[in-house]
Image (cartoon, rainbow, N blue to C red):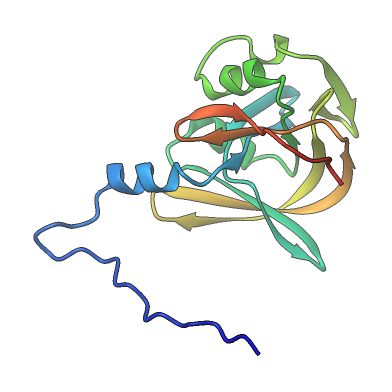
Amino acid sequence: MTTAVQHPPRDIRQDDDHPVDAATIRRAMGRVPTSVAVVTALCDGEPVGMTIGSLTSVSLDPPLVAFFAFAGSSTFAKLRRCHRFCVNVLAEDQAEICHGFARLDGAKFELGQWENHHGIPTIHGAVATVLCEQDHVFEAGDHLGMIGRVTDVEFSDHRPLVYYRGQTSQLHSSGSWE
């Protein structure tokens, strides 16, 4: 019988003379690869969208997803007024869309190929298209979170675009995708 050796938890808190700062947290969390997605909606007849790197599955029953945005984001302020939205998980060949929607200005919806799915603009060729109804918005430090109740999902076998160490990256696989 093999038993696991349990080590006491490390105290990662720094003392009062050396508090953990935002730059250190950013560098540490940058080592965690994240999905790259563009959240889109139709608000007051106008398409709106923003790049996110914080998508997470919250619940399977009921089906809920969440993402986070800087509390001062003017795009998020528009998105939170929309009842329905779509999370478009980007494919590895869609970095231009990622960077375009991360900017404050520009003709974002001229990038990539677009479809209309239940009245919401969706990105053709995305790894996953997750249509949601807004469940609620909540505060989380200097960010706001939005939980969406999933109403429809489509997905493909395209390889995802990921964000790692401050830049978009591609996954490399030595095996097959199952």
